[in-house]
Length: 284
Image (tube, rainbow, N blue to C red; front, side, top):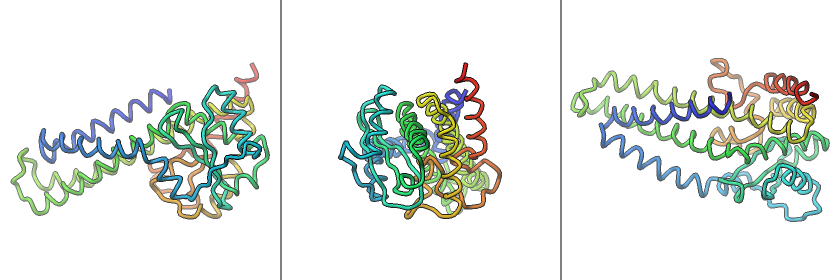
């Protein structure tokens, strides 16, 4: 169900992107928008992982005797995945994320706060969650969604400028007031779609973690602790652009308006409830 939802919303995001490009400049506008998006996707595909790891000053763990390294190694073997690179972020707020474009170029990063706070079962639940993201190419999907949403916002800015200063001279004959309205509404719609894709992938990764460890309770406990800490403080240098990557939104302490529309993650209560349902299934 979540997989189908993700495909649907990515398709909808693509259609929205084509529509806004066509509205702004006809066929040439749509083509120009796709060329921009292609360049952005190329950069995101090959360099986004390095960029985010550098941003958080993540340090590569190379010692195979390291406790976290051994947990990742054991779970990667169990999941039949190549060993990802393991990074440590010197931040006292507990959290974790995965990055990389494919199995061979993947990484798992955890904060020092997570290592200090969680017990082994909880850490295994978190690591298994991140490995599930890697298995399902969630980081790549999230990057594509973010790039499209960003490109739509950029084109919308052009539309807004054109509607104000361009008069009625656009080729498609779209009234400037209509263009201005589209420039405001479409980026919001794109952001909602992007967030919905992100939430769908989190549910799938939680389920993947529960099945890999055969211990939903470990992840349940970890999520509860991480959410509690995230409400009291956020990771240093955290950004809205990378919030969707973390197992818990680093901005959980902020008030969320408009319900779940702009959440990058499902509520922790919903995630824990779904894991509770899985307990009965895994006992069968």
